[in-house]
Image: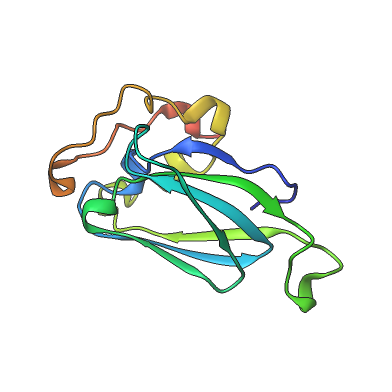
Length: 142
């Protein structure tokens, strides 16, 4: 949930709770619009699109591990039913059965603490070969 204009830094969905298969990731945008950047690698040109409430992103196939970022949340651009309390919800669906029964490990995610390993990550030639980075016990509220 985004309640300020702050976005989310460049990253890839590479962690254990992101799923370890090449099955697609589906993201539903609800509420405030945002400026969303993406590219396959740092050397590729960055593309930026505006995502609005009701838009859906699908990361699959060769794009399953794509680099992406939320550059800015546009709190002034919300559906009429949200004008009094603007925010952006990013609802993401992933196939990650390996974390079933371990939900408490992934209950909390703090970007500055848990968005690690991105700089050293190398995209495998086949997304289906990627097994995900291991979870960190610090993601639980302890």
